Length: 98
Image: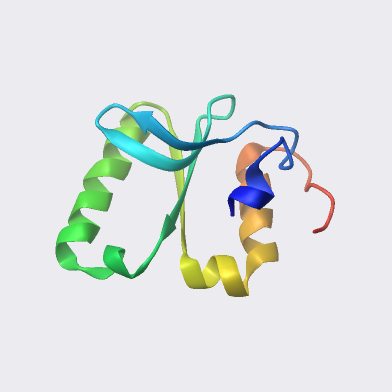
């Protein structure tokens, strides 16, 4: 995913990787759009991890930050759809195809 977000490839917006936000760390964060993109692996499937993610997302939303979550499988198997959703959240027309 980093290869597809870096260097302003999405709607000419800059993303930061593993960016700290409060006590949390976002997988990918666009300061300009106040958008977090999270890629969830198998470790996010436990009840404890899901409760943590809900609290984390709530805190980010309270800070005015939108959070998009995708599974690793979505990123691998539905890359175009994932990128289209990110572009939509960035509020601009889609970036050129892969």
